[in-house]
Length: 356
Image 1 (cartoon, rainbow, N blue to C red):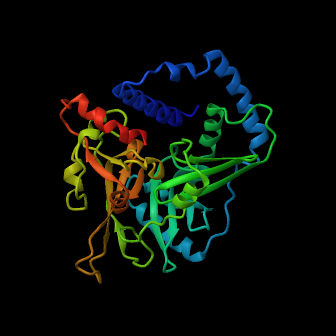
Image 2: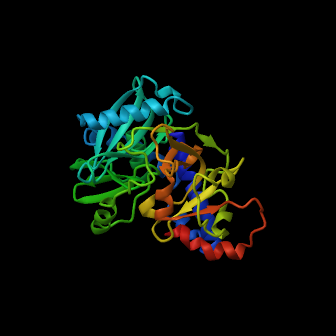
Image 3: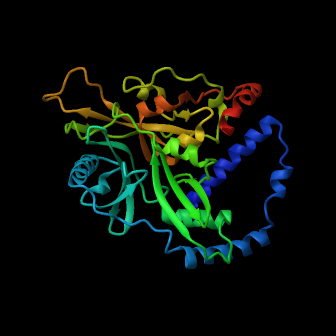
């Protein structure tokens, strides 16, 4: 199994086991639900064959022609990002555009060096007919909408029996800050987080509500203003796994995080936790913030009152950049304390946030 998928799955399971222990729940029913090593090995081989041989034709995304205005905005954004690490490999890279539903309001732009993916952008349409940069990231693995990792997930979860030969339909969708796969097998539909690869507990009505949400243009880089220039990205080197250290659950929410104080809050080795209490499934939370990138308007012809736009470096290895304003509008940020002396009772009281 791909090491990135395995590490994400393992870390989340470790975190959840810690929460279950805090809440005093028994682990016996969970343990008894897993097949033996022999059963799992034999089953996964069969499922792997089913996925690769029978479902592979249906599990594909097709690159489609995109508007010239979208291509222009994307090319300008990539050109400016490629001036500094970790995006320097994007110079002269090729791009592939994939429409994201519902209604093709967003596009996935895969950045590739030959056939090797080296990053991505998600660009969304604005109400005035322009575009905004919803998110972006650099890397060769662990990126959203990975077809390889999706197939491995289906194998691991045994969603497809070895004899399956029914109809398969795969659609790439996008809600604000949440990449989603919609997978239909015969008459059964699954919504899957297309980054962390977790099945989302959504009904059809909830999926429609979440996926029809929009990201406000304020606090993002848009096509309206062509003078946005990214500064060198900052990485703190802090904890990037929200389940590795649960002390942030006992920390009060930060009232204001912006370009004026984000560097101080992170510092060297610092980290902020993001969560959306009661609706983590709709934002992909919880995850850690371990860096940021500031976009500033060029001094010439720019209004003096326009502040920098901040994209927070999130997730494992801080390779995914999300608008900081969007994080604060949809959830809360918490400082990971330096002290290790947090009362376990406080963690127990806060742990229910992680289960929602």
